[in-house]
Image (cartoon, rainbow, N blue to C red; front, side):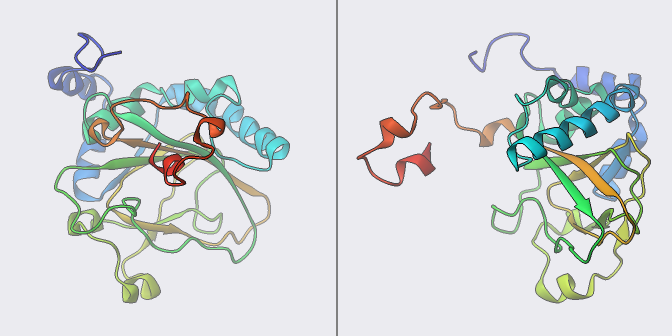
Length: 240
């Protein structure tokens, strides 16, 4: 569909009205000041058990939790939760695109994700406008003991990657504490990681990233498969 097709994206006024209608004013303030927020949407709560079961089933069948969109009908519903989409378009603009959809399972143990910003493929300083946002669907309660996301509030304002000394010391870091069914949304510039899980059981999370429309390719070359690339410049698959 051409990018200038009428009605394909919301106007700024429509997004502002949705923020008020859906009661997201505090979430907007949280994103501005802290770089993250926790969304409660009844649609998300109703889907949570199905999302969790689908992640576990797909990982068991495929050995991977990536590229989930067409692996279970619930994922198409999951990426379109109303309050989530409003916040996504508020943060990264009208017509935002899905960047990644993946499911992770964290078990008890010392495994810990290092501190980083999700804008990891971009050089610093990051632009003043937001490149991307990430949402984590909490299908098991988030607590520090359960291996919740570690975040350093306000670091999105620095517009750079975390330096090495900060990655080791983690000053002013805290856990994102949220009940099952929550959607934890953060700015692609904010510094975060996670805590090791200290309790039995599993922490199952659906990771959804959304990216600004202007960063996506203008044309789609998905119809050009490996057979078409065979014998051509080896850089082609990466470029496509």
